[in-house]
Image 1: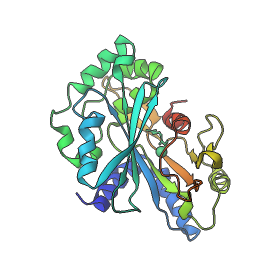
Image 2: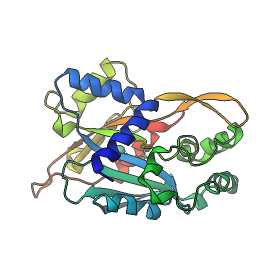
Image 3: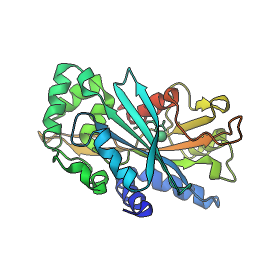
Length: 267
Ligand code: OOG
Ligand code: NI
C-alpha cells in the first residue's frame, strides 16, 4: 500500500471523530502555513491478533523500520516507533500496546471478550487501521470498570484501532516557530490543551517539545443502549531540536509520551 494513500485513509476516519484537527489544520493554513505531519499513533491490545508484533509487518511492507522501544510501567504499556527508510517526509509512527496481564482480573476478563472477536488474520491488511473497532461496543458497566483501571483500555475498547492522533510538525511552520506561540494560538481560539505536567512536555535540552489538545468528545451508545459522551481523538504539536552532532532528534521520550497519553482521559 502506498504511504500517501495509507495516511489519507487514516486522516479521513480520524477527522470524522476529531473535527478539531481539521479546524486547527485550516487555522494554520489561513496563516499561510503548510501543515506537515511529524507522526501519528495507534493503540492496541497485546497478546491478540492485532498485537504490536503482528501489526509491525504492515509498516515494514510500506518501507518503515522500527528504531525505538519504550515502556510505560504505570500505564501497563509498551511501544515502538517506526520511520520510513527512504521517504524522509513520511510521518513517523508510534505504536503502543496494552499489557493486559498487568491489569486486575476483572479487566482481563472484559478485554478477553473483546479480543475473542478479532479475526485471526486481522493484521494481514492495512485497512485494519480504519475499520475502527474489531469487536462490538462493550457494556457501559464494562467500560466504567476499564476507565477505573486504565483510561487507555477504556479508550481502545470504544474507539478501536484507528489513528488516535496526528501531529503537526512545528519545525515546518514559519509564523509559529516556538511551541509557546502554537499553544497561545490554540488557547486564543478556545482549545483546551493537555495540562498534565504543564502544557509543554519536554525541553530543548531533551531535543523534543510536545503539546496536545484534549481529545474531542463523541456520543457512543453502549451495548445496553445507554449513550454517553466520551473522548475520541486529539491533535498534537511537536518541535524537534538539533542534537550536538547537528542532526534533528527523531525519536520519542518516555517522560513526554507518558503525559501525552492523558489527552484521551475522560475528565
Ligand atoms: C501515544 C502517546 C505518546 C508521543 O508523541 O509521545 C505520543 C498515544 O496517546 O497513544 O504520542
Ligand atoms: Ni504523539
